[in-house]
Image (tube, rainbow, N blue to C red; front, top):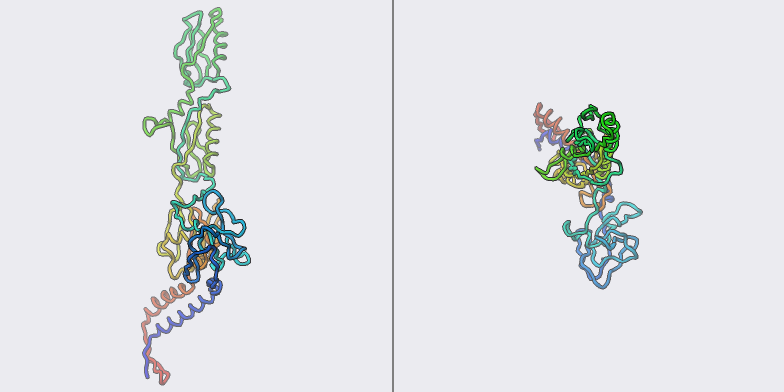
Length: 439
């Protein structure tokens, strides 16, 4: 009896079997992931129990009997009087409506992560309602701190509060000087020059900027006494608050978008630029801290103005998913995102993906690299209801799904044997099984 076979098929078969054995020896024991059959007593009376494999769902409600917890040591949350079921339960009673499941109050055996066999009845409202009619969620971010490329709208408002300090004349202010004795000394609409001085008859140049109206009147009386007996000079402010007016005019948008405001974007160096102040540090500050910083600087300059920063557009946040996924690349985080959600954005994982060793790379606030390895196999297969490895992602995180050992062996065979050796030496052998010979 003769049998013709290919050397290539024999070698490939042996290598595949060996790789499968190595991959099996590296896996966790099935007992750690299998769900044992655990019969639970429904937490409510007169309910219908539906079995999905080894998972029981107790549905419905009983208006008379709140029911007892199957395991007194494990209690779910009860209504805290606000919205939703978030507070730990007291005694051993359950809400009148419940579902069989696992939540944050479910304890695993000996303090370990809760598995399906640790299921108890959880509040029906926690799962039955959708996003639009369910209880509110606490903000995902307690306080937002500004980042590079954040877009702000800064609204300027005149405070119009009485100042405790006497007004000092500024460059650009307009004043009127007159004499009750000699009208020839009158000067109408004098604009303070950039050097802070004005020109007057008989006495010439007078420094005006930085002085109060009372101080200027006394100085003029003293200087004009050499020409006029008791001149009784009067100084009137016609137009003041010039620096404040300049700032308001620079942000005046009433002829366009409306209001007095200015758009600003946090630059790569972490600052924003404002009229009259220049560069202001912004990165890492909250909006409240940013407002205090700006107002303090304006107050030290001339006062009379209050600025309110408003966040109009957050800087985009991205995560990167690579490895054994159908669609690798960069994805924008429009909300809080977990590792499994990131894998879903990339289209799931390929059969050759090793989801037992998912790697997450992250840069800290000092741009130093840190990494961790997560085991999401049980969660992605539906065997771990409350996985501790399901962490939240941060901007610029990289999620990498490596290859399984069998996948690496398969690619090795394909690259070095199928596409290299066998493409150069495409040989076949004929074996004579009866005589144990081949040619």
